[in-house]
Length: 171
Image (cartoon, rainbow, N blue to C red; front, side):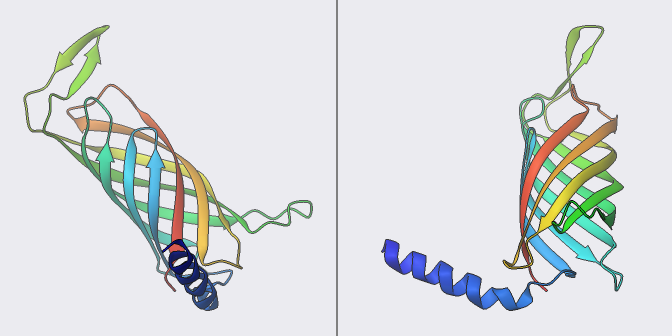
């Protein structure tokens, strides 16, 4: 069984290598963060692959766990350095989020915990800053990011999330 799975993965990666290029248009993957973990989709809408929309949906461990959806407007710039010969991109952007917390969700005010009612929604603005590496040999990108955020509706106890992500290049 292990040999079959390994052979399948090898054929899949080799077959998918044809989509590997310096500039891609869509990628789909997993983001694993300090608080938010889930699926991530990035779609570029310019010819140079510099401007994108990024969608995220998943779980959050912020304040007793819940569900989280985010949308970002992303700008991506290549880091140009003669010493750094890696295809590394700097990513920054703005967006917003919506969270749903079935379990008791809380915030901290004046050092005391304040609980919201059950089934609470949270809505706010987000920022993102990170780096992405595209090997150009495999159909994957690897990244790290920081997402500061603030909820206008039912703010939580935290304000920043750090994460690692891996995305498969679709085209």
